[in-house]
Length: 381
Image (cartoon, rainbow, N blue to C red):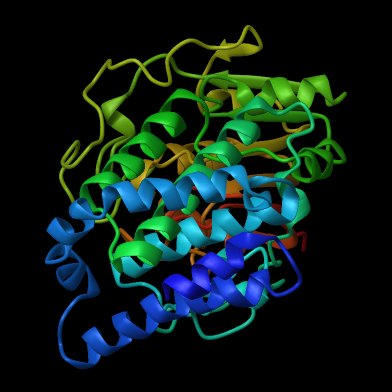
């Protein structure tokens, strides 16, 4: 294993993808053996933490070789490290055999996970595949083109992917404490910037449906990027969490089986998303009713895939076009539910009953997510 990794880092030649695939495949094979024995790979890795710590100087030296070499360079190199980062997180979560594990790959030839092509949408437990199918990720999506959040994402996952690759290559383990820190940092960055990462391609696709009205706009990162690219955008959000939109609460229809506020991610009146861009105005679902002439943009309106905020916006909207950003059933690893973490199950049912999905555009995602932009058109009798 060490020899495979050393060889792959000597230069980014045409065999690098296959060599990195082999390094990750060895971890995936071990995880499969653990499952057959009724154990979790994470437990085995947990027993190797002391050995990993003892090997830290060699891990650091290996990582420095990765960082100094071409493996941390352009689109293709960054994509390889991004998918390697995603792979180790899926392995630790026991999701490496998930039907959509391969969909985290920018370079499918270097990904040994999952059970199908990267462009094949598919769910688990009988969840229908997306139609149209979930597109494959492309390395070109990582070109930041004046998008600071995308640039930050690329640097983070390259750092994490390279370091996890070095840990496994040297010590046949990855640090549980450090991966937990990475996961927490990813959550903090999403809270500080945006839940989904914009790309030039996704923004261009959304601009084609201008004029737009975005609700639950957060700090306005996406709205500002759209405005900078010439779109006509009105952006709204409430400044503080409203318990009425938690699962089970609110006049907008409520949730699916918990008392009002139970399990809510925030407390009543708690500030959301920090400092906002000047383009974000105060407003909630009522703004959807005031702008039927604009395509409605919603991005992760229902925290953890629970609540009724998205549903309230949908029911207030009388226009013909939805631009929905986040996860969807059939395009999620189902960490909390088979409907994903962006939109409630009831919201998804009403959208699918009243609209037709016409476009899908993939987005880079933090480990464990499968974000995309979906364009929907209202069904007309």
